[in-house]
Length: 170
Image (cartoon, rainbow, N blue to C red):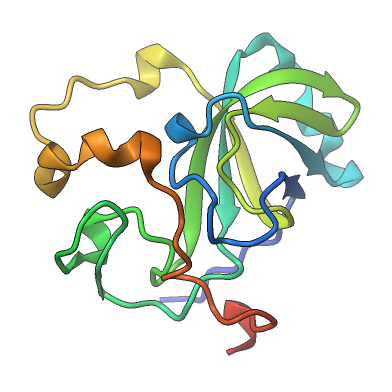
């Protein structure tokens, strides 16, 4: 199979300067404000986005450790397969975050409920459409008895490289 490469289309800005203490999901980042800077060459792609109250941000976890197929995720003390978690240390360190779109000004999006580190590379933006995206889930796996921990759960640094080292440089 051919190599797949992506180039960032922008940068996410948030109050979170380091992994430790960052909310682990946008549902636990209620009211946290940030901005999404879309590079000028992609700004035409933002046409009509302001008609959506929420957007999906796809990003690159640029500070995550080397990938591991077995991880101890936030909110649990047991080891799980990485694909049964949302841990950032994955073979392709891609993150997803659903945020509220407050305002669009040229190539800058003001957003709320941001759970992403400042300076995170943005790979894509998609509109959040409840009829497309909401599902009635029958099962949520090992999280069934853990999901109540979400409001108090924050990044504890377990998936971040030591300060000054980036995943891409390893």
